[in-house]
Image (cartoon, rainbow, N blue to C red; front, side, top):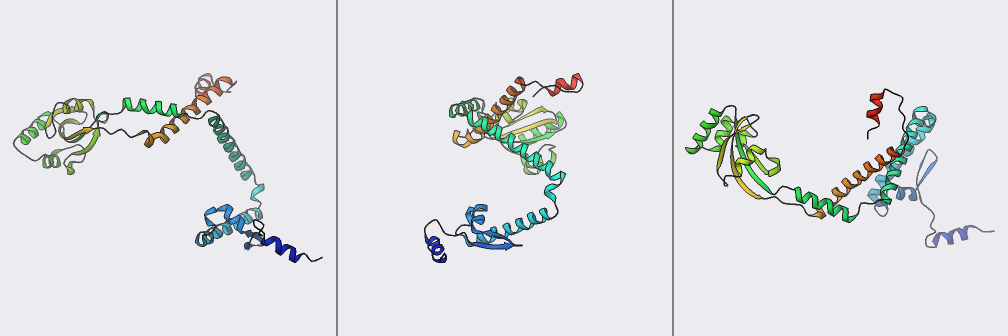
Length: 263
């Protein structure tokens, strides 16, 4: 019975080509199918295929060495494997719950609307000079009124941020600006100076370099972040539910047990 012609004919049929052997590592064959499974991008790309094959060879050598040294049977490996199994089960349990309770588009939109309501309304471009005493602050204001350059005075006297850059603070949203400073700069126009203002570091002289409406990012730009926040919230609520339904007994002191039962 002649089998060779039959095998040859089968190999020519679509979808029945025999897997090509690419390498042999200590008698263990690595096939093209294994290569593509490890990295689908290797299919049809010789450069990626070559690199992926070298990776497979390295992995195979390390796996062979691990078996040779009996690492798989060691207590450390078994514990690590058990830990990885637990982590996988935990992740799958959470993924299963979130798949059954997905974050809805409506919930994401509602969270976005809440953010828009609390988003800053204005941004101010500021620079400041911070000095330790009120008298020093008054002197600097007098110098500014005489035409002295703000940047030079900041470089010479300021104990605040960026003195060598003229005390430049850049654009800040109104909710990023300390309340005492915000109250003062809202009373002046762009280009004007206000102060002295009492701040924790001493006294500040602030110049408003510009004002503009704060930009609110569109929903499409933040939806992924909002969905992640909502998923985290759902996860926390789910864990709280599981804890409330479980019987948890801690063999420890009463105070510690009370704290441990908190989520």
